[in-house]
Image (cartoon, rainbow, N blue to C red; front, side, top):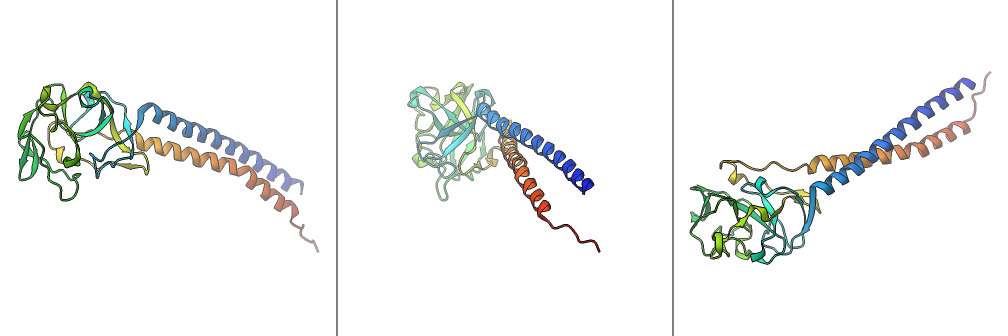
Length: 245
């Protein structure tokens, strides 16, 4: 009996130590993931349906805090332009400085002579723009359109303003990486992939989520060890001793 008791006690000490390590590591991962996310991402609520069906009115999005110089064609960005109302807006970048944007050839947007396959447009909706045939985007600026073209006050609606309706890169607050709830990434804008510069790489949202989930699992698992081990010991203590003949 003494050997059995010492063995169980030894196992109990090792298990308690491992559960403590699991809880500590879990806390680091869980809190670290949240802190990392708070530093890198900014949540925004989209007020209109101008980006439908990609993003709908009332959706909460996570925008990676980036410098406007990092923005590429196809990115969905949060920006603030005084002449557009001085409130945060969400649109898609279809042209950068020096690009020639045209509409429409075979009902498709054309950038630098290449027809863009815009799979994110609402089903059956035309790619046509209001008040634009061809425009050249000034250097250091962005040409922005809503995915729901018929319900979007974007660069095409401001084409008569200064700088051909474009927005300076410095107006960008962040690049939308995902919907916050239910969490989902945005469709890849493959139509711009063949243009010089390619597409932007996704932000670090996935490893952040993995860290938070793994941390939660470790904390719950480590915390559950104590009660489970205690119940197991009680069951063992209540078990009748074998009868020796």
